[in-house]
Image (cartoon, rainbow, N blue to C red; front, side, top):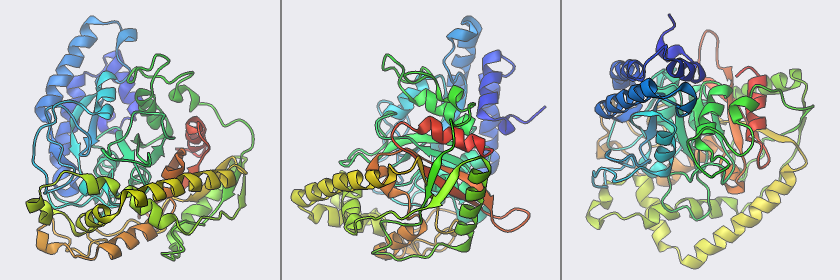
Length: 479
């Protein structure tokens, strides 16, 4: 029999609904996988085994008394949440040593939606402090490592969730994306990661997001698995979330169809960060792009190089909006020394900015959105590499040692600006998609070297409402 963790999320869902597999069997299997693998992987911060077994027992009882058609859409399917997401009764650390450890009183929007869909929660996954960075390392737990090369990181900020899915500790996972935080770890870990368009699913995990950057989306091994999770996150015709279908037809139904007609895809390496942080994509990124172009062309689509003009005021405006939330976070003054250098630096700068400066930046980003979407509209989809570099070594962004345990304060270098520049050069094509509020998907089309290596991906950006199309194209390419 196929190992439970080797089943696709769709097949696992079917086995749980049919009764071929009980929810308790599924939860127990994944908990044992986590116990065996997580000590060297660092994907989970908190494992809620007792809660998982109680929820799976309740799911089995529900299965015994309800007809299959009345079961929730993700009946008994195990999930976990990045540790920015509130789950009632479980501590939300936000990846920070500066916060008190208090259990959340109620579920956040994301957990509430998936609980309504029948899932079983296994715990909380590793994140960077307040979800700010493109790597998942903090001062409270071991870093999240890449299952394909443990010396490398798993990306961020949904890095723990991506590592867990890639290592078979979860069938799929919800992430949140405010500047690339689903697509970056998906690319680093060889997964498909979808950022839905603004407003499609319940709000993401930022308590202060004045630019509306953050949205929840799936990390999965296939387009069908991502579609299944997206269905559970999307409101139905009555506005209810967790029932398994959006207004109209479901994403899982749609993903089985091929895209209608030949798509015109504009390929661009232009980035709004290149004016302040000039960068050269690594050969591996360009190799992945070439593979993506070949696959898209073989699928019958036209891929044409294009030039996108980005306003050079973007970096300052985006950084102002992105860091506004950490400036407003409630942190006792005596505990601010426990923040990482990057968080502490950006918090101080955010607090020193005037409200007028923030409003000016938000107004600019709205204009940037209009200008950029006008250029994108000449094409059905925009194609870029997912990342400009291969997954980076653990500690590379911060200049820290690679230690296997918790990260002492003394191991963190203090160059916040150097850290930030490295992140922007690592993932230069992600944040502008959040500013525009558009859907985008990262697809793992390439592996470096021979006989293994590291995953590399392509990003496809679509117009508003194109989530189904993006998943269809990913499925058409074999994912």
